[in-house]
Amino acid sequence: MRVIAGTARSMPLRTVKGMDVRPTTDRTKETLFNILQTRVPGARFLDLFAGSGSIGIEALSRGAETAYFVERDRKTQQLIEENLVFTKLIGGAKILKGDVMQVLPRLEGEEPFDIIFMDPPFLHDLEKDVLTYLAKSSLPAPDGIIVVEAHPKTDFSYLDELGYEIIKHKIYSLSSHLFLRKQTP
Image (cartoon, rainbow, N blue to C red; front, side):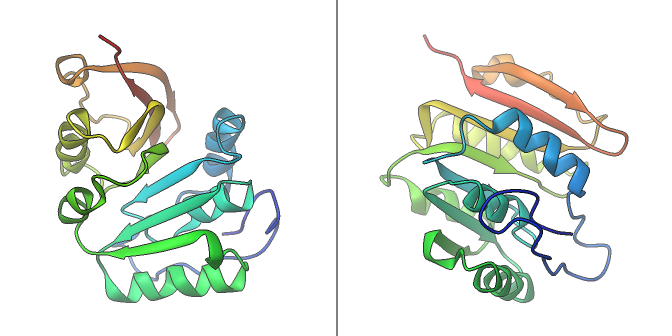
């Protein structure tokens, strides 16, 4: 796995060994950032269930002002830090240790995030818990976007009820990206 573009272009990133972490492939990451390209420069980026940190690191490499990484596993947090140091992007980063649902309330009152990305373990409904929280939260910027990486068969029938509008739904062979924003009243 590597950084696709920007100041850290082509730099390799370390990943966690084993089946607990499912890194986003380079091709999928490239497609994701092609869709987000105009939103990333200067953005405040929140990477939930960050894993190796490759998505937030890609955002920083492409000009995001800051990227917050939320990860609960200590070894994986250390890996994120190592990747940030190696790519020389640590200055724009903040690693938040803990479970996503415990960290989100601690972020309330901070400047909102322009892009919130989440890649929770597939088929555990964790994205529903996070989206339910974010629906009533001040964390997404008023014109912010939320991107969910999920299994292609994940049920998102509840989104309208929570007040979300689907901007785009990109389906790949083993995953999908759902681009959302809060509906304006």
